[in-house]
Length: 181
Image 1 (cartoon, rainbow, N blue to C red):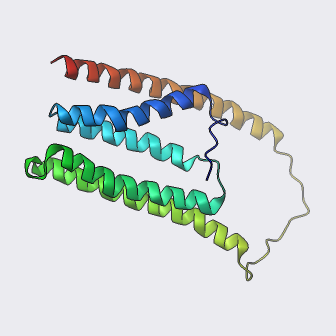
Image 2: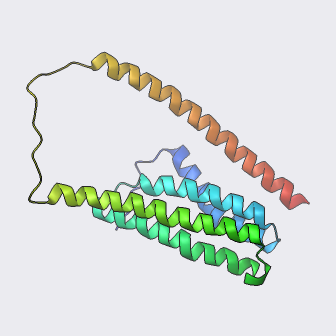
Image 3: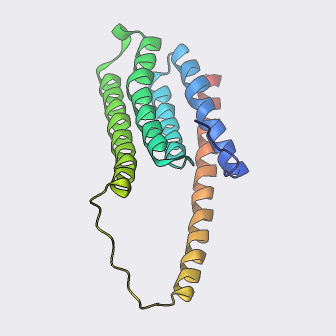
């Protein structure tokens, strides 16, 4: 199973690297210094960004579905257990335990749904009793609509990039503030 990163832009690669760094280095460091709630917030941000990247992986359908499901199991079971072990099972307060349970369920169910859906699409395309779609002979030219849609998509892409950039700056600022205390 080879992951193709060449299709990602430099910005996407940087965001992926920051998300991995956050989940693998920053969260354990915050837990070590007993900042559980901030570590949980970083964990949520890291999960959401990594989930989006797992969804966007360029792979065959079945392998992609299995990758998404395994990511959910890893994050929902193993990462939550790691998080709890770093704190100490006896030191986890009720609110944090509730939040970790929500994270676990979110990771498992969102990835199971997305991965299962990808696998089901493959299964439907390869089934023998599949109905063939009726193809219309009428050709409708929607070139102008596609151009407008492309322009709107580019504007939206710029706005999303700005929001992500501001979010990263805010996360780094929060981290600097917390670690300087």
